Figure 1 (cartoon, rainbow, N blue to C red):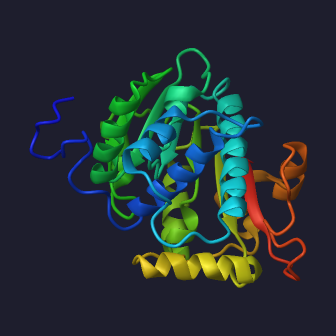
Figure 2: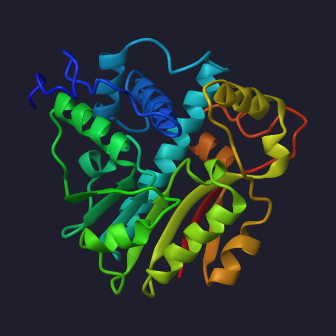
Length: 286
């Protein structure tokens, strides 16, 4: 990469960091980078490590119970890693919606012939390109960047990039749904369903209203609002959202995932806080 390009600073990073929801990609990547330092790490993310080394310091804003948040991000990452990788043995097209600084195309062992489409705003993808170049990583599959706003005609942009809606696909939407309104999530799922051949899979996460009102999550929500972001929706009943679109699904309990992974579950998902809320880790099939 030519660091003398006017769009880049002397450190090789774009002159402007991604704004808005793009900031959440920075926060999440830095939390994933912290996992690299653990001897019992659940994954290794060299792209996230390159980001941490380039930017330094804590994630944007004041840390809120940083260890718990990092544990949650690590567990959610592990869930998506396993579900997406396993589904690629049957679905050779993988679409990561709101892909942010996700590095799965570079670090997972995908089935032969897998194509990964990363859909996000162009400024986020440009920033990611600089981080990937800094890390010196190469994709382990065919990788296609699709610059599109998920509130716009992202299906058209995806098809124009070579996506084939007649082939089974595994869709991933990690840390995305809360930042969209319920109406926007409905339109997103309508678009996904319209391009999902029989046998397609969908992996998503969300949380319900009770958890959204819990003390720990309220603190994080205030943190996000301080930098101009905010959660716009919750999901109380996944069946009422997925069922009408023809999806069947299974749920993974994050607390059980924490215990299986040797991580402390208390306080992560409402346990021990007097909150009956839930984080939904969902794997659906069509």
